[in-house]
Every structure is written in structure tokens, then in C-alpha cells.
Length: 372
Picture 1 (cartoon, rainbow, N blue to C red):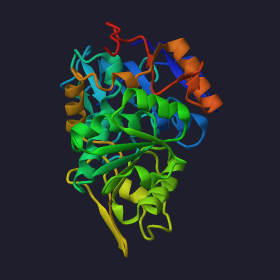
Picture 2: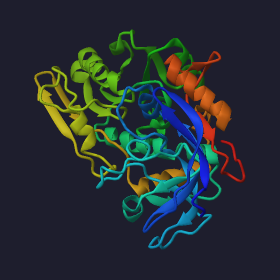
Picture 3: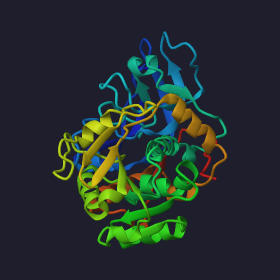
């Protein structure tokens, strides 16, 4: 590849992103050069871009499919044209966290380092999985893992705190991957989010975070926290206070501040609970907190295994359940405009439309498949 080769990337500058031409690297020993297809903007990306997190990568993005453009020496099993998925979380190498501390997928070419390739984080992806829906592989797998963890406590009610993509995805998948009869309660921050869930997940009970939670819970309850990192501890405290002994399990799935604690669960490191399951091991590591009137099992996870991702990809080939969550699938220029408005205005309402998930087409998918 000529040394002058460049590609377009969505590069952040403070709290604004711009489309720029950046140098295209050549893959070295053990490395892969990929061409991302469609990439989605997740809640963690938004926090990074708003400056709420200090992750250093100038290019974010970790949810999407890609094709191999070039394979460096020692990358047996990969060839140009192969469609692949990158597991963004390396369970054994904290220096690789795609879109956090290494450049992410919001660019037309991305270099995947030897540690990630050697660690098996690049896996084949079904050729017939629609490109936009492929951006749901990681959240689908992560939510399914979380529901499996909570299922061990056999709750009568699942309380989902958070009304973004992950929270709504959990509401959609809970009857299938938790229990068919489970009662699902989704706690919302805004009326707009509440109305969206009422429309697209009518089996769930949608409430605002100002509503008394205990009125909506039947029997025992498990709490799945899918909020931004600043909302995790308040969500846990609200559930413990409202539900008391009826609360039997807690699973932080969204952001968690470092060394996050609450006086309601003294001695419990919520961040440590989540990190204990980095990469999605099974059985999961758990912590049990007990005091008079309360016994709760805590789990959590950050990422999942490659087999779990591939199982999600296979399921999504024909499963259209989550397609409504892809509310905005846009090409590069309008996609960046929406992205900047979400960041700058600190809202998910753009032109009076609620953005559950923004997906940007990087222009590398030759078939330009949509969600359906």
C-alpha cells in the first residue's frame, strides 16, 4: 500500500467530531487492516465524546462488522474480503480496548493489533447478516449473558434501569432468555423514552424514575442497571431502598465509576463486581451481600467471549426482534451531524425524534444492506 494512502475517519476534537483524511497504516507482523461497514454509536462512545470519560482514543466505535483489507505476516486464516467481527474487550490485555484506548471503528480503515489477533478477538461473521443489524451483535450477546446471570436468582420481576438501547434490548429479550413469565419493569429518565418503550415493548411496564418502584414489582426482583456510569450507584440505591428484601440480584451492565460503592451495600465494590466478569466467563463470578432484611447476589460483566458473540451473530441472521432499536441509519456526513448534536445538546432528541441507536454507514459495505 502506498505510504500516501489515506482514509476518512470521524475524529474527535474536544467535544466535537469532524470527518478527516488520516493516514492508512500498513499491517505489520500479526496485524489486520479492516474496512468497517456500519458502526453504531453506543452510550459509552457518547460519554467519551462528551468528555465524561477520559478514554484517549481519537476515534471511538466498537460495535460493527468489517471486512479484511490486508493481512500482515503471521495472520494465517485471514484473507482480504473476509467478513469479520472484532471483540472489543481483550480479557488478558488491558492495552487493547477497541475505541477506548486504541482507535475504533468509526473510520474507513482500522488496524487491529497483533495482541488482539493473536488473542482470537477477530472472528468470522456470517456473510448474510445485514450490515446495520450486525452492529447489534455485541449488545445482544452482552444482554443475553447478563440475563443468564440474573436467571440463577429466579426473580419474578426484572427491573431494567435505563432506557437506551441496552435497556430496551433487555426488555425485548427477557421473556426469551430469562423466563417467559417474568414481569419486566423499565425505569426511564424521560417521557420520550417511556413512550418509545411503551410502543415497541408493550409487554413491559414503563415507569419514570420518579415513580415509586415498589408499586410495580411483583414478588422477588432482579435489577439490571444499563445507565451511564453516573447513574449506576443511584439506580442501585433506589432499588435497595424501594424493594428491600424483595431485591435478590443486581447486575451492573452500563458504566460503573472506578471503585464505586454505596453505604447501602457496605464493602461491595460495584466496579470490581463488574470487572470480575471481563470477557464473559461462565459460571460468572458473584458477590453475595447479606444483612438483616437483605440478601442480594451481585454480578456484572464487561464484554463477552468470542463464542458468545458468534452465537449472537448467528441468531441475528434471522432474528428481527431488535431491528426497531436501529432508529437512525445514516451515511457519513448526516451521521456525523446527528452525532455532534447528540454530544453537544446532551440529548437523544434530534429534530424531535428520539435516537435509540445511531448507525453510521462508513461506505465500505458493497451491498449496503439495511436492518431488514
